[in-house]
Amino acid sequence: MTELAALVARAGRLATPGARRILGIAGPPGAGKSRLAARLAAELPAAIVVGMDGFHLADAELRRRGLRDRKGAPETFDRAGFAALLARLRTETGVIYAPAFDRDLEDSIAAAVAVEPSVRLVLTEGNYLLHWPEVRRQLDEVWYLDPEPAQRRAALVARHVRHGKAADEAAAWTDGPDQRNAELVAADRELADLLVDWGEW
Image (tube, rainbow, N blue to C red; front, top):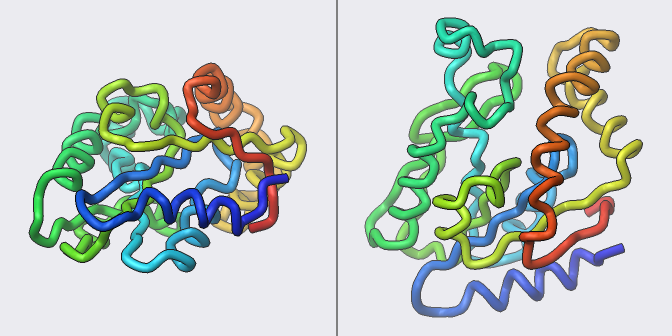
C-alpha cells in the first residue's frame, strides 16, 4: 500500500522553483482521486487542486443533447475547454480562474478556483487524463489510482447515496454508467507514470 508520505515527497519533487508543473491523478469513478488530490494540496505549499469535473457539461445541456443518463462518459465533458485551461496554467503568469464541480448541485460553478501566480504545482484529477492525448501532453506526470474493485464499488455507492440518490438508484448507476466508464479508464492504466494502491489517505 502506497504511503501518503511517499506520494507527498514525489509530488514535492515536481513542485520545484521555476515553471509551474501539473500533476494528474487518474483512475475510475470512486477510486479516491479527489481525496488524494486534496490531501496532497494540504501537505504541499504553493499547490492547488483544479479538477476535471469542473468541465462537466451542465445538466440542462446534457438533457438537451440526450446525454443525461450517460453523465460521466467522455462525451459529457467540455474536453477542449479542459485542455485549453491546462495549457493556460502552463504558460500564463497572471491569476487564472477555473471551474469546480459541486456534487450537491450536480453542476459546475464557473471561476470557483483562483490559481494565483505563486502556485507552483497544480493537481488535476479526473477519469480521462490518460485517455485524451491533448490533455496528457499538458501533464508532467500522471498517477493512476488502482483500488480493489469491491472497495471502489462500495465507496462509489456510498457517495451517490450521500449526494441524494436512493440506495437502489445508487447501486444501479454504479453498476451501469459508472462501470462502463471505469472499464474505459482502466484500459489506459499502463500509460500512467505511477500506479497507486487503494488506501485511506
